[in-house]
Image 1 (cartoon, rainbow, N blue to C red):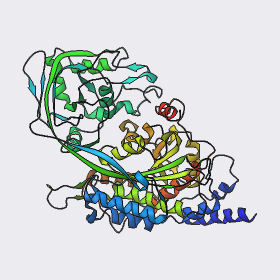
Image 2 (image 1 turned 90 degrees about the horizontal axis):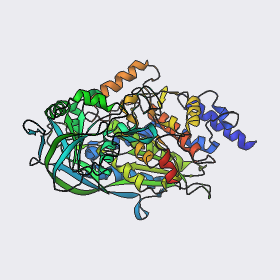
Image 3 (image 1 turned 120 degrees about the vertical axis):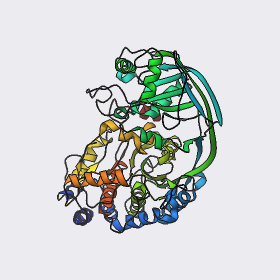
Amino acid sequence: MQGMARIVSACLIVCLSLPGWAEGAGAAAGGSKGPSVKLPGAAFVALETINPDHIRWHVRYLSHDLLEGRGTGQRGGDLAAEYIATQFAEYGLKPAGDHGTYVQRVPFVGITPLPETMFSLSPKQGETMTLRPLDEYVAYDQTQQPQSEVDADVVFVGYGIEAPEYGWDDYKGTDVRGKVLLMLVNEPPSDDPKFFKAKALTYYGRWTYKYEEAARKGAVGVLLVHQTQMASYPWDVVRSSNSGEKSALKVEGPALKVASWIQFEVASRLASASGMNLSKMLQDAQKREFHPVSLGAKLRAHMVSKVRNFESSNIVAVLPGSDRKLADEAVLYTAHYDHLGVRADMPGDNIFNGADDNATGCAILLELARAFASSAAKPRRSILFAAVTGEEQGLLGSEYLGKHPPVAAGKISLDLNYDDVKPLGAPEQVEVSGAERTTFYPSVEATAKEFRLAIRPDARPEAGHYYRSDHFSLARVGIPSFSISEGPKFKGHPESWGLDQEREYVEKHYHQPSDEYHADMDFVGDSAMARFGFALGFEAASLPKLIGWQKGDEFEAARDKSQQ
């Protein structure tokens, strides 16, 4: 009875201190009939120590000018990594990186296209089209060689998708080895949730998948046709995202000599000069019976690149599980610490501090690590904490972590990721897009209810946000994964206020030097998201079985493979 009294007492303390915690949270001690927040009393006490000011102090430091925007492989990024490793050590967490350290070294290659690059399309009829870089095309050589030559036939492959679970195959067994593939972004339009998930974008619609699939099939290049409506962003985003150096992990396996985008108008001219009509080609590509079509045109490219090898670090720590039988399994928390560094060619303030993106997520990760380490009650499974690098370069640090996890992927029950959790006050909503794809979702729903947080669905599923943050790298190797963030409804404000804050941030501060720390930031919401994640992670680490994907999910096969 004394143990139960302590649990109830701890519950009451938390109920009084947590913004949005349900009045009936005491049921979590044993009275709930369904899934619920299941924490021992000592864990509730640890949860209660999660403090907005702790998060504030980390954000202030990590986004300070002294850290020079935390660029990947740069001095400021290395300082941030050392700071995070030092915090993990101070909390008493054990190192889970290379050779008994907190550091997992990540090998990178930086690729910068040089002006000597030549890029032209020679159609069946008419003159050769020599394209202007950035205005008409962008292209990178993924082989990571200083020079590559391409003189290859162009084949239109529709959306460039082979998805047997949807009965869709744009390739139809066509040998595309040595070819350059002209293809569309996105995926076949649908209102059927059983066919490419209706309007929600799957990974098949992402440009990264299209490059990867083409390389697997032996193609030497890809020409992605840009159309604002299909891509969900204008050409200016393509231009800015593909100018200057781009980083990648060291190449393993097949790679494209030309990974490129071309303007819609360029593709239209190429089709016309090849005796075809691009509008009709787009219509044909939406049909299941579509077959690849050779345009009778060639891409001739002389790719010249500056190649730079460098290293950065993931910082990884572990809290060992209390159950000897389950301690070799784990729950993982992730957040990326890198940002965009310094733009030497920019006048005025040229430090991209990244306060919201993603000093906030790192600060939450550190506060979770401290709270777990301080808890007198330890979860049965181990808890991993990973601050990853290279997110802004294409989720590269988390990709490396997924391929080289400190605990086998098949034994990691769940990844909870934090990315850009804006300090706007007490939230009344939570966004956990992707959680519904896992067997853990009933617990997520129950926990959100007890925190009095309404789960807000993805407002723009067609944009494919699930595939644009670090949790996706872990999902790809089979680990059930999703990010935790606030919805736009905050206490004392209508939802429209939160949407206005998000819109202003995207238009004026996202990936700009003005994403800076300010003393009037309200970190109550960040601490609420940390507490919510603490409750979810502790429960996941204490379940009898590992979490999985819902039957038929696109990552189910990867999960099965990881557990064989």
